[in-house]
Length: 152
Image 1: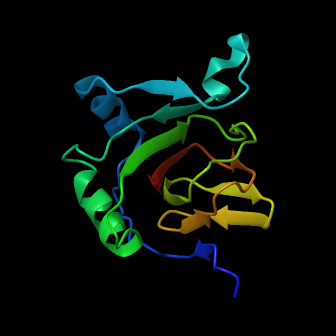
Image 2: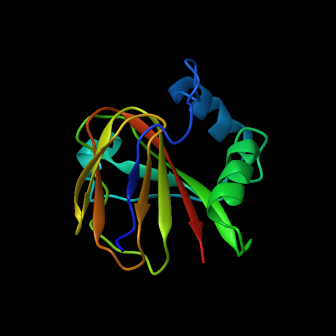
Image 3: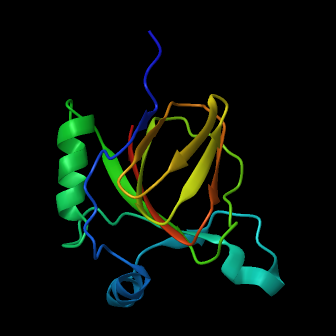
């Protein structure tokens, strides 16, 4: 039986969720490893997708991480939680695949994920499961903040 990939309204997102202002304060408070995850051009750096690694231990994201651990990782194997965000509509990640299963929880904005298995539109609170080694690409329809939970 094929695994279901998209779960609409998987998690309730508050009316005043973690937004771009809170993201700015969050990034100022912590010294996370960050990188771009897109083919940006130097003259248009704000069209990039940015990754913030290892946010699962923070007060802001530990409750979400613990919820995902409980629901998605019954064997409690090694896992982490990253933030991906983009500031402009149309920003997209590089096409890639991961060696492990990734759970994408859309937090703010609207986006499309292009997978080998098809196109999936995500709203806040939606969860997309990307199986190991499945080629995928994220495309922001609006500015967006997305959480990526992986266990390996």
